[in-house]
Image (tube, rainbow, N blue to C red; front, side):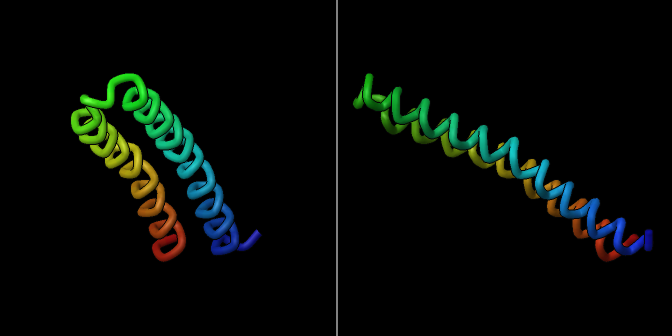
Length: 76
């Protein structure tokens, strides 16, 4: 197998695996935040703030996977 082709396959695998975890985490966070807001509507501001911070950290993981995929494509 050509090394460039292997790098493309590895980059695709990296992005696939790197997007599954954050996608599940963000879905779980938003669902739990909506449940919390439904139970205590007066705490919606604090819940939203905590949810957006958590989403930012989860999304950072997929951005790291994107950087690794770009490194595989353009450096390897």
